[in-house]
Image (cartoon, rainbow, N blue to C red; front, top):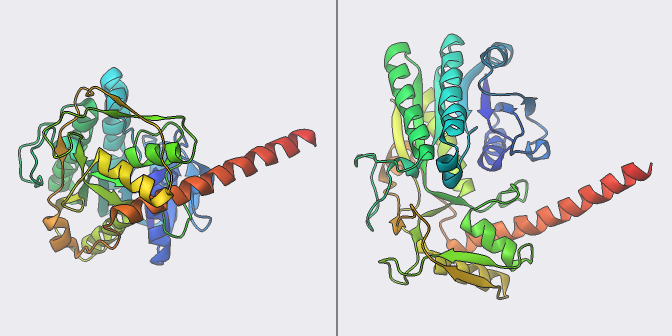
Length: 340
């Protein structure tokens, strides 16, 4: 049996690959490398460069490797970009997911784990949000993910495929062993941006909005370490293989930190200050988004191990330094090859 990881060359997907390999699984990665990197894929995994919307290719991989589970990360994730180009998001996140689900059904893959998002909830209050609240996504990104959840629900009812949809809150940090991390140029994640600024990769960074109804006026988010997140996926796979019922669950720590809390943590861990510019609110930013994660803890027997902001920040900073060294080595290699 093998696990097919789509988007396995990206940030969360590459961590998932390591998590599965560490658990003794055979792993096949399907990624078109539009935002991922071939070097981010663990060498023990088989990397196939291709599109999840290519039903023929997916069918061949399922048959060739005896795939019994798919963990689906491939997709687009930038909310403002989804507003500017919604059809691209409905194509990449929804239409191609539909094709992937169909290929799974045709290939008799029994287990499907889907990378969803807290964006399906839309604006929430200060209290942790549970999976049972009304779903009111406010962007094409959130709606594209919610549509995929609906397709999985309907496919499960019609064809018997079992699934788990995990709704992420704010994923951050990097593999504690330094094997992979957030490597996308121009990433918009707060801890990534703050780490880059602290290390001099950016001259400054912006904070959007200081007048929210929160204790310090800045937005509050639930930051979950990427290693805890992929551990939840592995536990979801174990549960499905054991005959567990379909599940939708939040992945977060059930408490949040403000933007200024995060910046203070980066300064504390790095030991140096950096330049921050303050701007007005961005459209669509909620004051607070925090997970009620009781369902994931209960149903998956999930016990997060890295629930500490300074630890998350430390791993992110360590990866940024690792990435800088990797980029320097890549440039040296390119120069040497050019000289030859």
